[in-house]
Amino acid sequence: MDRRSTTTLIIIAVAAIAVATIIFALRDETSIETAPPISQVIEETPSSILEPTDSSTAPSSTAAEKTTTTTTSAPPPTFAPGETACSPYQSITTAGVVASPELVEASGLAGSRTQPGVLWAHNDSRDGARAYAIGPDGADLGGFDIAGALAFDWEDMAAGPGSDAGTSHLYFGDIGDNFSIRGGRITIYRVPEPDPRTLSGSIEGTAVLEFIYPDGTYNAEAMFIADDSLYIVTKDTEEARVYRGSATPFDSGVERLEFITALRLGAEVSGADMSWDGATIALRGYDSVWLWHRQPGATVAETFTTEPCNAPAPEEAQGEALAFLSDLSYATTSEGSNPDLFLVPFDD
Image 1 (cartoon, helix red, strand yellow):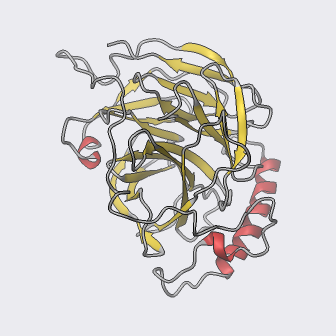
Image 2 (image 1 turned 135 degrees about the vertical axis):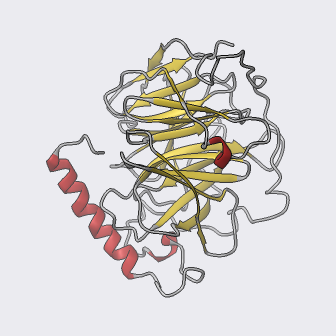
């Protein structure tokens, strides 16, 4: 958003402050645990933007949900002496053009875990709570409402394995806060990943995960899933702060995020993802892609103590979206009408 015109930023700021005033005025700030979810207290939001949450369809927090399954993907990479996580990535190809006329501010991207060749995306702003399915060449596979979700400032998304074999979840991160008006609270919406070719109407079964930062208010545009946890990376040129929260529904109302580490990359982080085999963490900026190799058994925190390498970064107008695919390649795209869909192949 930082590259938009001053006029656009002012319009967005006025609208955001108006909505935020309604949100935070209705909150009980005296107790984090008893504070109601945002989606339940915004009574004045138009029904076209916010649909009532159906608790009967929202996934519950069960032991089964906390057990992840193994998704078939390429084997973990092996590196010769002197090689890094970036060594297998040497070229950039143009896979196609994003054809959807509605997907004009692609801020998040995720590779489908259940539908080969399908990518999921969402808009940054000027849209409701909607997910867009696109083909491997950018073909328009449809846009779908997310039932029970509110798009305040969606900035990134991720895909993760579901509770049962062959299933997956999509996570949409309402984590943006350009004007520091959220009071440190963010929301993640989790839905079962559908098959866009057979889906009619909205995506149901939304679970609302609300979090609060333990130490302040931050703007964030990057999120990824690892080991039943979701990780939020803040957007700041001087310091990208990494926080962890549960990737499965919880009963505490609002969960306090755990601070993991701070990264000094010299640029803003606008997107993130983890490879399907768990061996590579990617953060991206407008002009950079940083990769970390995660050793077997290492935590995310331990991985971030190592130095990243610089992987190929396509030249894009405002690149904020990156997603790994099953073959360990990664795709990127930019905000804007009909942007290119780029692919950086994995060449072991």
